[in-house]
Image (tube, one colour):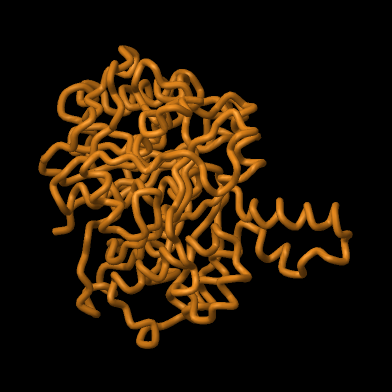
Length: 415
């Protein structure tokens, strides 16, 4: 049996930069920040008062029945919206394909935190009898995948992997693996998150993980910059439609890029801090290259996990140098689109793979904005402040999660 190849045929996203691929990608290319003062709640009591919020989002249009939208947590609404866009963008007619061969893996790092907070308050103030019967299904991290399958009648493999901020990459990578293995022909895969909430803000802030540059929101997320002081939370969803190549060709699908590599590893080091030597991510990058049968020198662009934390950006720089050797400093363009979207947690990898794919399609590498004084310990070509026109044939996207979870995805120009 010949090797099964996997291609990306549809893209859907909801982000602080816009409610679709076009506005999100245009925002990235222009170096626009989606970060501002929090409006979803009163930020005054919180140390961090800024975030990358999704603006003007209305869920009803993405669900077949508006009542189902109202019974879905905000993270699920984002997931369903991005999945609908990915299906429509792919041009697939769901009624004409084998639904048992079409799977869903759209995960979330934290799940329905908003539902949990709201119903916990109801339980405390109004009593347990008043808690919504929808609480548990609205809250759990797997429900977005379940609801997407119900919306479209998709009976194929359906599950989610929850690995904090590596969630999207693991879901996309394992969906890729199932297509390669022959268990499915198509998947909707990615991640969604909505945690700009009291517990999210307080929890991350008390870890000293969040930026407190509240007077300059648009300049607060500054990966690789010497004066970074923590990440800025974002929200949204990034979902891709991936297909086995012959399946895509048979229906005349347009192909954005080929998904050629996937690498996974663990730091086995600390609850929330990265291993300082960078060896864990470097191993994942090496595994992705090995799967793709590519050399380090073949990669032109790397979308970094780089969240704008002191330890994290340096550790990833070390990982990139370990994995790429001399190429890390001569020929490899690196950027962190989190400088514009904030850190979208479980959705980050989905959005960042999309940015990596679009760099191949458009020949434009998005910038890392707010690099005013580059940290000498992050001595890479971080494409500072302004997008760069460049031919990209191979791009890699890194995602790392609390618990030491590392995942890298490798995409290549199709041809």
